[in-house]
Each structure stands twice: as C-alpha cells, then as structure tokens.
View 1: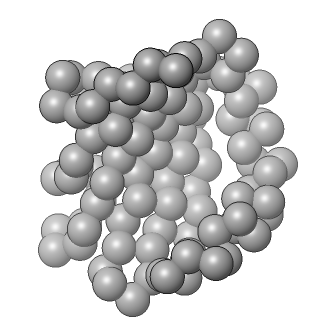
View 2: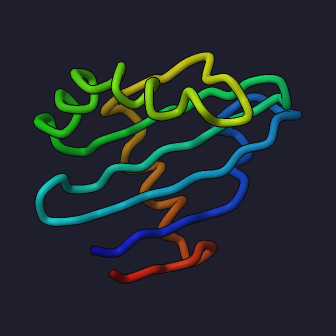
Length: 103
C-alpha cells in the first residue's frame, strides 16, 4: 500500500488556517484522501473516497472516527465525507510534493 502525505492545500479550505493533507490508495478501499484544517482552537476533517462502497463505509463509521480523535489536543468540530473533488485532491496529493511511504 502506498501512502502520500502532502503539505498545505491553499484554495481547498479557508485562508489563514493551518492545513495538512493525506492520501492512501490500496486494492481494498481505492483512493481515500483528506485534509485536516485548524484555526488553533479546533479542527475540521474532510475525507474523500473514490469508491462508492468506501464512501458509504466512511459515512457509517463517522462516529467511530470522531471517537478515535477525541483524545487529540484540538477538538474535532466537523467531519465531512464526500465523493466530490476526489480527482482534484488525488492530483494535488500525488503531484510529487509529498512524501511517499510504501508499506
């Protein structure tokens, strides 16, 4: 499985906030990517999946994701899950500006 981690993504979220993006692609789930955005007081997580079944799985498990993130330093305000903008996010994350970790 290949995991790509990239830096800030201007234009995908509001200006003046810290952002980090990530993407994972594998045979079982397809491409799953996301962006975490923070204003220093809390954070938003926006997840994207290119496969319908993965998108539906993420929607069903949204509460589990929130529960897993409860112990982080910044409270999670919003978890968005979508199939929109997947190709744009994939191109941005896989554009060679990130770090490729192959496991």
